[in-house]
Image (cartoon, rainbow, N blue to C red; front, top):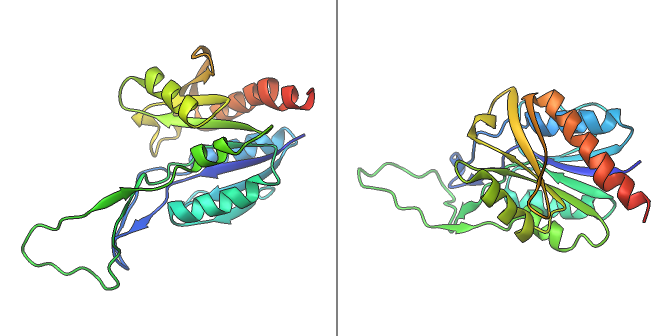
Length: 213
C-alpha cells in the first residue's frame, strides 16, 4: 500500500488582522478522498486549510491557513509519501502588503495590489521524481482544455476536472484525464461515492503501476 498526501480545503490570505481573501472550498472532497484511501488500506496525511468538515480519525491532519503554509507543510510531508492528490483550492493571489492594523473606512475606494502565490501542486509536481501526482481543476469554461493545460504545467499524472457546482456541494460531476488528454473516466453523484471511484482509478493506474516498476 501507499502513503498518500492529500491537500484539502481553501486557504486564507490576510489583508489585515481581521480580513482575508479566500474561496468557497468546503474540504468535503478532500475528506471523502482521505476516507476512501484509508478504506483501501493506504496511509494518509491531509494538509488542510480552514474547514468545518471532520477528517477520518485514521488520517494524519496538518492544519494550515495560508497558501505559503500549505506549500511548506505539503513539501515536508511529500518527502515521505508515494504520491499526492491535490484536492485543495489554495488562493492564487495574496496582497502585496498586509496591514498590521484593521483597515478603516475612509469613504474612498480601497485599492488592493495582489501578487500570485506559488502553486502547491506545480511545485511538488516539478520535484516528484518517481512519485505520482493527481491534480484537480475547477473551471467555469473550457473544462477539458484548461484541465489538460494544468495537467501539463503541474507535471500531473492524472487530473480531475470539475465545475463551479462542486463548491460547497455534497455532490459533484467529474472527468479524469490522463497525460494524453483522453478522458479515461467520468463520474457523477455524491462526493463520497466519487472519491471511492477516483481512488480506484489511482490504485489501478498509479499505485499498482508504481509498485510494479
